[in-house]
Image (cartoon, rainbow, N blue to C red; front, side, top):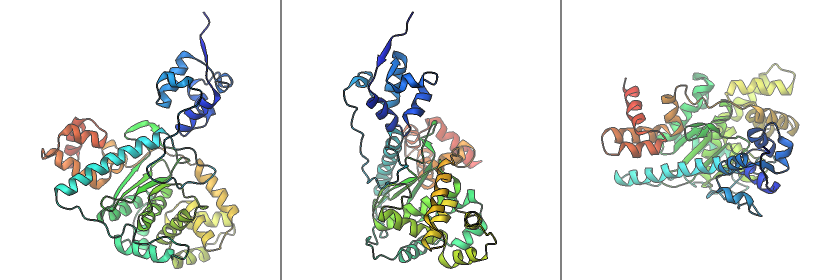
Length: 378
């Protein structure tokens, strides 16, 4: 018996792929791997059409619209301009709405305990082309009490992010790092889509870092986002160097993680004759990615854009599994902010917050809250 086939528009297939941050070829491999040519022409079975509706997050009937639904726009500015950036898809919006839900709960909590104060560092500096990035970097370092030489020397790349995030959370900024949507390991976040975002709320500022990125790249994104907060400019970031605000935040992050004097000395003392391998050697000293190191070297006039582009393409290919701390119970507070997780679990176990609500906030079942508490206490 012949399988009933349905004709969909190529525009609809393009939209579903784009809204999920993947190419239409990748979508074809996902739903019709043995008949990709037919899929790309829009000819699919009813079963595949049902899968597409589910993937696109739309009712089945929407597949037959003449024009695809309009892509939603984020509430915060989209600051990505690079050619590799793909349309922000369902994964991003689900993550953003989850973070927004947590932020609103945290605001209510602060009001309840009488600690609803504005952070004076949010928007402390107004971005202009004359603003000195060194001044902003110094203010961030002094505010969070970050000693680059000490921290880089005394920890591994794995631990570097955690130590920096703790200092940042100490001043009232919640830091989230996740490589998937919620706790769903089948929904990996795409670094081509975004590396991080921040919400420059004066009371509850937020930083989110895409944990799918290489460990050595995550710490650069962390400080890139904190630079955004100091400018009072929230948004979705991708380390883009063509947009002036993004380039400025790159300079701030680079100055914090690779201070000029230390970087200059390390560059001069490197024994490598190849610029390419010199970048890789110096990046290991500062526990940053090769791409971040190349950005810094270019800022100081040590290399040209050709090497940056080479290392950028390498970075885009380095896809890692979300390893935010090994076991699920180590990963949970990293994904949900160490500080916020501690508050939620503490209130749940003291019966000030229903276990069901605590579970919803941390994207787990109510029983998992109790189990997490016992593991942490043991």
